[in-house]
Image 1 (cartoon, rainbow, N blue to C red):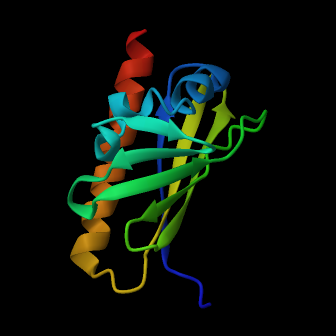
Image 2: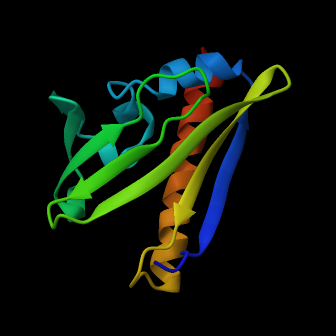
Image 3: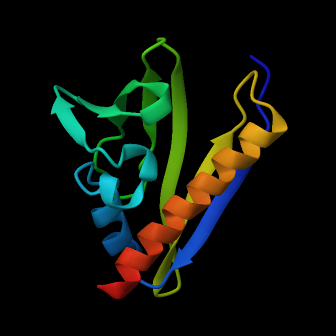
Length: 134
């Protein structure tokens, strides 16, 4: 498979990286900051099931809890297509850097790619606002 074009979307959060990871890695917290999961997730075995809005029901499998800030997850659509999402939190001084690697999927036009990038930045900004308030 040919490598896909990629964009790393990141923000600095003024909280210790472990605090950011502990909050953000909990699937139960994701509806608070990830708009695409606003309807919530329910556990089904090792997976989490949610309503992806216009894309329908989704199945999400998260990386196991770890000491490295890795929150990678695979989203499987109703069509059976699976999308690997790389999401990481790393130390940045006394704070944290949260990074999402957006891979441009086959058939995604320029506008859709930009829309996806904007949505991810908005989600990360919401996460930042929540964590910097508490």
